[in-house]
Image (cartoon, rainbow, N blue to C red; front, top):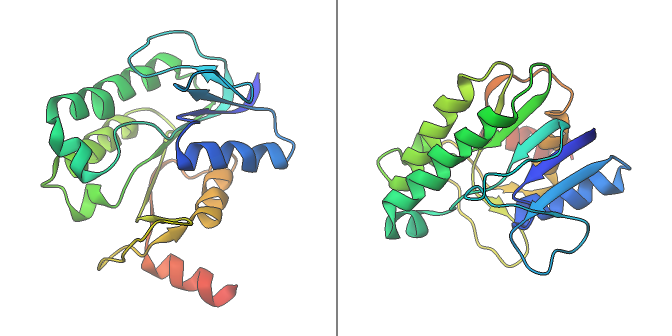
Length: 191
């Protein structure tokens, strides 16, 4: 059994978190839709229902991300970001093992958009799974990407997000966890 499985290991957050955990000598696997498959990743897409390896913690860093891609095809966004995501989570759920869903501040700040609606519906689905963890955070800042704060959530840098994700593997954080401006400001002052 693996320490962690990252579903969506070919995206910016999933891939860098995969490397973050590897650097900490954890036994970790990640999925990818990319061909050829590199770095020992597992070929997987939410649309391909297949067996996944068992892990103590499974991270869901996958889906159609962003307002514009979701607005371009609302039915597909709902199917992938809610229906197939939750089907996969329920299929691999085992009591005592952690499921961690990476949500978005859009679930709270933009619930009238397709992206925000999908994130919120997925959160409700994960809340129904005993012990599941939801991390809701603002835009992720990484090199080459401009992000903006809003009234509730500041941008979060990738390293800080990885630290929250890593903590979710062992600290009892079940349910919805918001990473807001207050948390961000406290981290900046402490650094």
